[in-house]
Image 1 (spheres, rainbow, N blue to C red):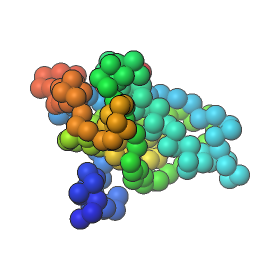
Image 2: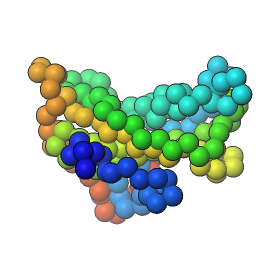
Image 3: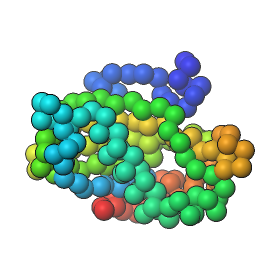
Image 4: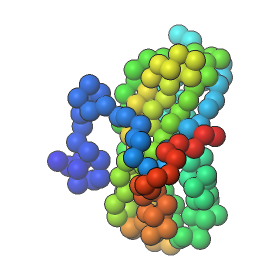
Length: 168
């Protein structure tokens, strides 16, 4: 129950609790990129740590597309930091693969925002990674967590009758 208190759902395996792209009006964002050679390991696969870079880049671009770039976050008096990642590695990618990194908010409450992701091989539509990240809103002045501003909560809320995907 400690994880629930910290804002993440309890641990589950990928089979019992799949992460699925929502179609309920939450803002969904897709980042497309090509795997670069230097991102691979000795086996020729994308290094597991590189997937974290992909997830963070998708989150940053999604926030910017929603109007929450660095300058806007500074105006709101805070910034997000990662508290925890939960990643299921389901397949592998190699240099030259085109990937689609999809991200969306799962829950937002107080200072905690749980964001989900999936990474798919764009050509094969094969899911490579499913992940969740717990982000925490930090007050720029105190350096302590505080509830997210209403502007962020409203922007990421479920919107009935709106398109559910933005492509980069």
